[in-house]
Image (cartoon, rainbow, N blue to C red; front, side, top):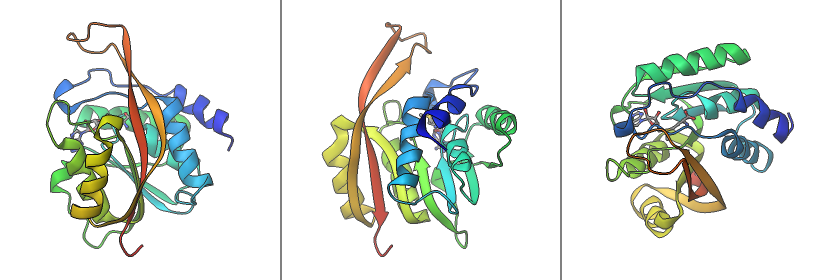
Length: 208
Ligand SMILES: C[S@@+](CC[C@H](N)C(=O)[O-])C[C@H]1O[C@@H](n2cnc3c(N)ncnc32)[C@H](O)[C@@H]1O
C-alpha cells in the first residue's frame, strides 16, 4: 500500500468522542500515524507478518495502520473502554482485525505472549509525570524486535538515557522530528490548535 493511500484511510477514522484529559487522550493524526507505520515496515520490516501491539491504542489508528500494512496479528491495549469501542468500530469499518484488550499498561502481564513490535503514542506525561516513561519501560520489556514511539523533542536526552540505562534497550534512535497537532479538545485549551515538536523513536531491545 502507498503512503498516501494509508494516510487517506486513516483520515476517515472516528476519533475520541468524549476525550479524558487525565488520560491525555489526543488523537494520533493520519499524517504522523501513516509515516510511523510506513517507516517501520518499509525501512525496517517490523510490521508485515509480525505480531504488533499498539499501546494506549485509543481509537486504534496505529494498530489499524499496522493491520493495513500486513501485520500477522494486532493487539490494541487501552485502559479506557469507550476508546476501545471506537477502535472496534474503526477496525470493522476498514475490515481489519484488531484484538482489543482493556488494561492499565502498568499492570500488563505479557509472560509467554509473543510480541514482535510495539507501536505507541503514549501520554506525554503532561498530566501524570512519568507516564511516557512507564509506557516505554513496559514496551521494551514486551517487544522482541522493536519499539516505535513518539516523545516530546524537549525530552530527547532524558528518553535516550532512560531507554539505554534503565530499560534494557540495545539502541535508541530518533528517526525524525515531527509536528504533532493538538486540536482544541479541552476547555483549558486557549488556541484553536497548537503543534508541538515530537521525536519518532525506534528502540531495539538488547539481544534482539
Ligand atoms: C495520546 S493517546 C493515544 C492515541 C491513539 N494512538 C489514537 O490514535 O487514538 C494516549 C492513550 O493512552 C491511553 N492511556 C493512558 N494511560 C494509560 C494506561 N495507564 N494504560 C493504558 N492506556 C492508557 C489513553 O486512554 C489514550 O487512549
